[in-house]
Image (cartoon, rainbow, N blue to C red):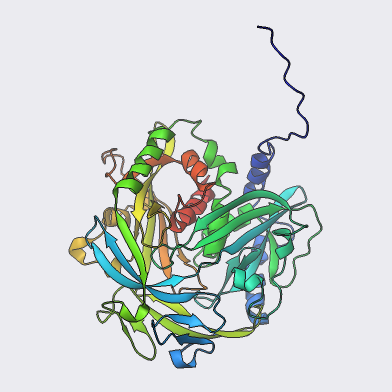
Amino acid sequence: MTATAAPRATGLRPGEDPELPARLARSARERDGKPLPTAEFDDWLEGRRRAHPFRVERVPFAEADGWSFDPATGNLGHRSGRFFTVEGLDVRRGDGPVRQWQQPVINQPEIGLLGILVKDIGGVPHFLMQAKMEPGNPNLLQLSPTVQATRSNYTRVHRGAPVRYLEYFAGARRGRVIADVLQSEHGSWFYRKSNRNMVVETDEDVPAEGDFCWLTLGQIHELLARDNVVNMDTRTVLSCLTPFLPGASTGGGLAYMPTPELLGWFTGQRSEREIGVSRMPLAEVADWRRDGTEIARPDRRYFQVVAVSVRAGSREVSGWCQPLFAPRGPGVVAFVVRDIGGVRHVLMRARPEPGFRDGLELGPTVQCVPDNHHPHARPPLLEEVLSAAPSRILYDAVHAEEGGRFLNAVSRHLIVAADETSPLRPPPDCAWFTVEQLAGLVRHGHFVSVQARTLLACLNTLW
């Protein structure tokens, strides 16, 4: 046969930006940005705190303006029919210490937008960050993405001010996309909730207005080492940069388990571990009681649902009321990491949660609220993580969960080096992943949980 010349291709571009990893590495190495030096960040954040009045107060449900319980179902919703509702959930599992339970859950079917804008300043990529007040944050004001808004917010159901910089993530002025993926939120408290995680780059001259500032990736990594500074939405968006950061290439493609085998293991976990979930009226949820100020279990375990009144001068609306979920104690989320053949691996757990779209996702090695467990029935590896020698603790900081829906929900985030004398073979619901393998999965939605994505963002600060 005579070879035929391939038709001349036109309009083709590289599938990946070959310069992006080097540019992001340069930003990660730069720990002192030019627009806002790191030494001045604390004063800047405190100045934003003083610039606006902030107040959050617990109120009875009857005083939560705009919110009410449906007389037929008992579901708690807003008079606009938007934002979210608090409903009931019936859960049945085929494994685990508890096989059936009912609970309140947040049903927020609309997809939110979490976006960070990137721009070269002085030849170094900088990230446009926002000092944003959320009523559930323990210190109210934390560092958030450029845009952090539900669809109800950015379509202005609240009739408030428009969301700043939204045009760079939607519409004709949208910048060059670095990352864009739908990711889940907390599967224990949300019913099938997803957010669009975006990182977008622009060449335009974009001034940092008011509560916004430009920071390098290295500066943000330094702030991630501090307690309660970088909010959850920033952390999940930053995890989407993992495929382009140094940790994703340190293994050279080598792994303890080949990627097809890992995907087969995970697909098997999803197929074989049964979890049945159905929504139900909140008024019919067993073992939970409602009075004028809270929805809670009589034994005071797990969490409660409360209402708050909020004043926030820096938000699109200066005042509002809403429900919040309040956990009963601080959590612990941890990665156990191990160098296998000179390649760093992370022990991931296939974790079922009732609100996940696909039943389970890859979660941290350890994820729990210790106060919810009896001393003789603690989750696997919790004691090993908490008793690790200081020399094995690679990362240790307290971070808040989603402050827009959860009240004072904080967890200690740990990255702990495994005891090299312990067996390499993991428990059946766990597997060793390289950072490169996790980077491949985080580019797709509903594989890696939000708690694991936070730890992945923290792990990226160690390279």
